[in-house]
Image (tube, rainbow, N blue to C red):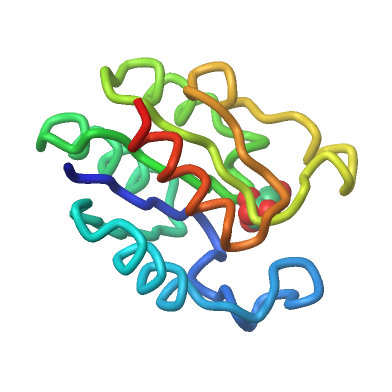
Length: 140
Ligand code: DQA
């Protein structure tokens, strides 16, 4: 079973980026933990700061046999109709994840444009949000 972990803008700086909000763990730590916890899952990982590249990667996942996507769209969560349309067009589940509890932060983060097209939403558990997203996909 193939699962794509996909990160949007600024998440390449995890571990150094606003550690008080996002923690000090890195995506390398997170992926190592996922591989250990789910030895039967084949993980792919991608990150981009560009909206179009995220759309291309989501479309590729839908076409290459990937079972589902754990997606942290970063700030595009709150702005991107293009990502909403893309996720709607896919026939594989996408789980929206956030490290922080976006509902406990600034008001502009309370609205997600992509949630309506996602299978579910997980927010507020730091890097463990990704594991919870994978768990949801594995149980599908
Ligand atoms: C985030 C929350 C977003 O509001 C923010 O723009 C991010 C990270 C999170 O994981 O908590 O880049 O998606």
